[in-house]
Image (cartoon, rainbow, N blue to C red; front, side):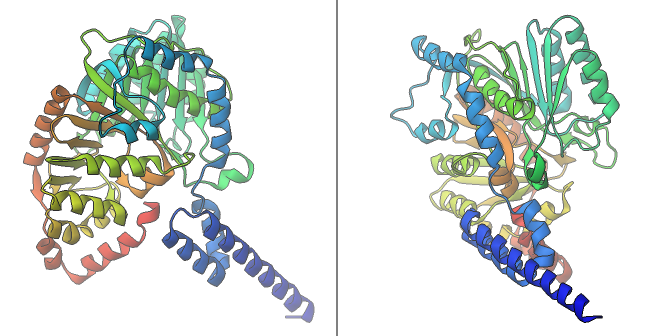
Length: 476
């Protein structure tokens, strides 16, 4: 090596080290947790060559570009503000002033609305039958948003139904996540556009330098028809969600169909995402309509990395604190941080029946292993953990006491709490809570109780793998 080459190499190393120090400073200032800040700072200063690319991709905790776009979208929604005034005038707002539900409205920045109807949809066949029937009945517009959209049997059926509505003069808008639907063929999208469907990808990859922000995903699953009916829940569009993938087997999932004023609240989340992806305002139905026979009080809670607060985190911690007799959680991925573990322990210690239902087989090996790492601490406090045996369980459902339940897109993991755009529907109604109770009782009947003794009986390599998987919890 010549002196010139050595000097150039030294200068490059010094520059890399300086960039590592600068990035470490940014991590300290912007990381949402002290543990995350410390981990990034040490890695960036010690191993800048390896850590810098990872920090650019995974180190961002706020989707800053989306924040500005959201302000633009909401500023233009004069009709949405009219919607809130109309809800108040027509008595369709639930009075939560003297209840334990005030924090949930403040987090959602949307109200609990009265006069809704809600239908619990168990598994893929019931869900897609309901959605396809709703789309076929559309007369004005259809809004469709999915994290995963596949070009398979169910994906092509959705495509055909959207094209049929577009040909009939119905405005159809389709939004899919760029990362989750990475394998979606251009021909699939091209056929939709050629048939008059407005299609956009949600670019969590961003624009320019922001394209490196791969860690952000839009995990929402939304269908809205004419501003009168909406579907939200755990199912994406793919044959596996109907149990057609032999590698996965039966697929257990839950969706919710709502009618009434809460549909306008669901539209707010779609409009924000559409404005980010397309930059175009949408002309929608913002006049709320009470559902026929609807008596449910429903809150729509959008959450994501563009929020000023950690909305999803605070929502579920508040929900855990709300429980007095029962707290049942079903999630395919259970990788919470310590504050959630503490909240679950405290709930069990005050006498709440706390149960957590996970799948026996996971499509995410790291998450599957990580779930075992919580058994000991939760078991000691009285929390019961179960593994669902009859196929893969993918539902995201909570049941609190006898009158409160949630169905949505958020998992009990750091990705949903802090990195994904999610949507959760909270329903305050004894009738629907009773349906969720019966559904979860069937699920627990097909599950096996997890025990710390089971983990201790496993070979050392498995216990080590569990601990190792837990270290990756922040990005799972």
